[in-house]
Amino acid sequence: MSKKRAFGKAFARRAVLFSTALMAVLFAVFLILYTNRASMLQKCAGSAAERGDYEQAVSLLEASDGEDNGDLIEYRYRLAVSYLEQGKLSDAETLFSQLAGYRDSREMISECRYRAAGLLYENGEYETAKDAFYALAGYSDALDRYDACRYEIASRTEATDANEAFRLFRALGSYGDAKARAEAIAIRLTGETDPEFAVNAMLGISNEKLEQIRALDSVRDALPKGRLAVGFYHTVGLRSDGTAVAVGRNDEGQCNVSAWTNVKAIDCGAYHTAALLDNGTVVAVGRNDEGQCETGGWTNIVELVCTDYNTVGLTADGTIVSTGFQAFSELSGWQHIKALGGGSYAVCGVSESGQVLSSHASMRSEELSDAIAVDVSTGYCVALRADGTLQCTARPLPWTDVVAVSAGSTGILALDREGKVHGYWFRSRDAIECEDLSSVAAIAAGGTHCAFLLFDGTVVTRGENPYGECDTAAWNLGATSIE
Image 1: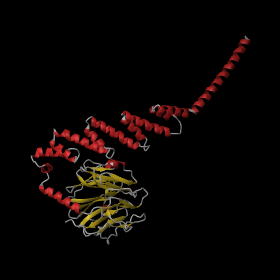
Image 2: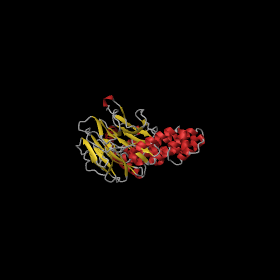
Image 3: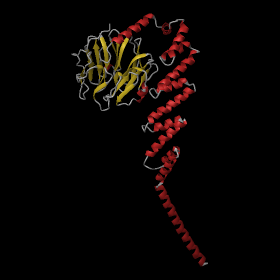
Image 4: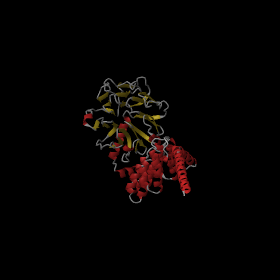
């Protein structure tokens, strides 16, 4: 009996020792596995990625405690691309949005939205597609697709509301056969055989109104353009002989324009000045920390504008070039542009059909149409129509017979056909007296000072003058005649 008891005790001791040893071995294995868990998961994720299974690769790396997230970001990017290719556009956009500025994620977000808009178009949901393409203005051929939606909407509308269809086709300008279709509707509804008479009748444009528009066009054509500009603390003028003059703060060389010749137009940013030369090239001086003066390779430029820290040019073929602080990727998709406006951190353009485009979504509005000129500043843009009225995203503007407009960060200036100036100021404390001026040929609105070129070539500058930016009394840029 004692032998059995002794054997039992010995067996129990061995069992305890064995189980203890086994637990120790298992714990050691667990420690080894846990310690190498991250690297093992990363290896498995790499294998999954090699197979093209980025969903599993992402899942494995997200479960990993490894500190290196470079692969995880890349696999998320590739997973987003695979979703895009599979047509999972919402999932793809969500992933690209989480990747912020990694690689071309921002552009890929636009691609997701572009394809989603395309599906809406294919399904005949033209109104929704139109809004989606308009929000993408500047990406790929989104503007053309936007017009394609508008054309389809107009076509659908013609059967039920010919008057509305006329308006929609006419708003499309030279897109496809839109002009011809608008004229055909006008002829059918008015009984006029001449397309121009028929269109004018539809628009309610009398012969008197038509003469007024022609008179305004004549005045605008005669007014000097690109002759006057203001920066934060400097003022620049272009003489009729193609030379330039500047006053004000010059700590970064923004007033060093005296050596320029053969200048066709000038404009200012916050601390830099740019000039369009007769040969279609552009020169710039002043602050260049953001690359706003790097215009050396530009050619074939027909119009020039500046934002605070960018220089932007319109080429003869209606496309845009830009350099400076903001990439303005939207501008690469703009085509058939006939006029530009620039200010603060934004650029606006007028298409051949009169539609106003903006680099910033907050300033876009389909209501800005039939425009012939545009300007922009902090948070708003203002468009000038051929009939001398203005449209503004900030507030209604009551002036008529307007021939030029200038947008500043503190207010808006307008010039009428009689050479009188009108001003609206967002805050009364920023108001600059200007409505007493007459015989004005050009206007330039700034944040703290404004400049006015008179018919006789002299320049009146008003506002704050800490650096002599208003010391233009001795200037004469050359007389202007609008007769």
